[in-house]
Length: 87
Image (tube, rainbow, N blue to C red):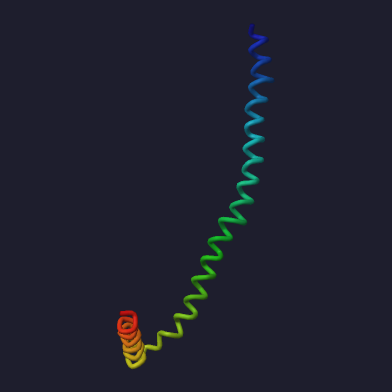
């Protein structure tokens, strides 16, 4: 009986444990590839988009009150015109 248990432990259980490790390593390789291409690609694109938007919006921040007042006045004119013409 002891020899059978020793053989089972040495062959069957080791095969199952090693097979699970081998399968896990293979799966991890594909998951790593997906992470590098899809997940990192999405975050890198998000960062690039934020950088592009910030470079455009940075130009609107002049620090001059007159520029901000003109922008607010223009927005009010557009809103009033929209309410008048869409009514």
